[in-house]
Length: 230
Image 1: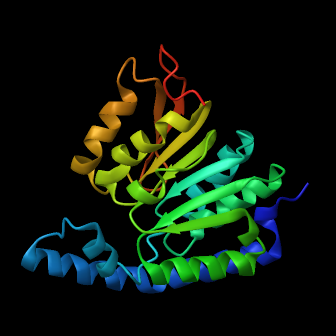
Image 2: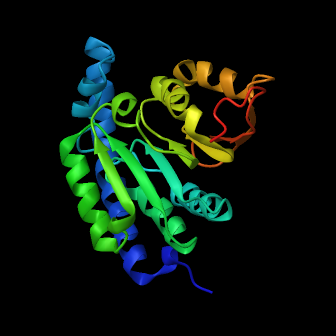
């Protein structure tokens, strides 16, 4: 049985977006790195969003297919994504929600133009009705997400993975999956997050997957006292 992900309409858009990312991102990343060498990295999320305004920074196709597989297998009905960009990973997640019988994907993105273009890409794919993209600081825009949350993708600024997870944690369903992308890219920024989800008694089971820039896939089991067990 074919999936929404494999439909010609969705694959055509993904092909175009991946091609655009492959042709444009290396030049943008090189320019940003050169600027950082001169002036140092910007600690300001809005400044970073501006510097990477035209960069896709996508998950790989293999990671996207894994996201689709995991979200579908979990029968995820409420998916939260930190770091939507132009909507590549969102397409994989929305296709999984469609294949699972429906639900919603709540995305978050700082840059207004990226929000606009991501919405256009999702509408073009026929999946826009499943997706809400919240513009602005994710620590604010995701604060009032209604649970239970079944699946979380963390793919924004790495130093915010842990604060975003803690924001969502009270609304995680027991058994919810959390995927953190890009372990290779900023190990110092990710250290607090990884120590948190890997710690005994954290309420999570967690495993690293050597795919793409490496992923951490965690499952929320809950803690004694019921915290976060929506």
